[in-house]
Image 1 (cartoon, rainbow, N blue to C red):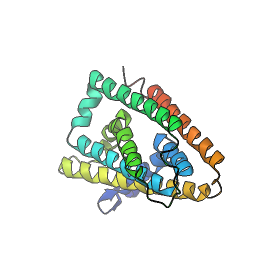
Image 2: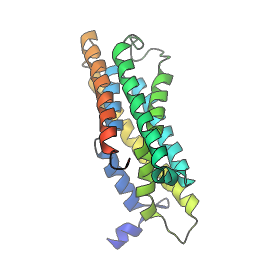
Image 3: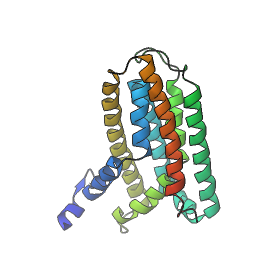
Image 4: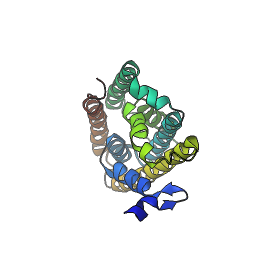
Length: 216
């Protein structure tokens, strides 16, 4: 066990990478959103959202490395602002998806100006998720060597986590996009978009429930 904990890959503890993989393989809001989005709108939409999610996670990781995430975890007022802003955005996003079904009526392979929208949604959803910041504060410290410079280690671990998460997210999008090939009729796609809207709304409810204790 000691050898496992001390083993590193490119300077990143193997135990941390394994922890990140297990966390990302646990069903959560990003996994659900990317899967249903790729089923409903196709591979390109899913990849755009993955890029947004990755950038959001990376930004939060850098913020955590600079110590601001710890301030969020210690400030009830700031935490509540982020928490309810995230919930409000997800509720609006669910409504927008449900009522606006014509924005992506083009085939999966055609030019799509809505890709930036999916990128922005993935980015904003993660930036407004206080649990993401708390993850960096709670999970990273045990893997940091106090005898070495803290900032470079935190940044390296943050980048490694984003790499793991993005790899898994890409796999989810690929599998969902392949499954979409059997769902090309408009009725099925409409139902999938409605399912996407409901799933986003459920993520908002999940965020309220899962952050209720930390909010006190």
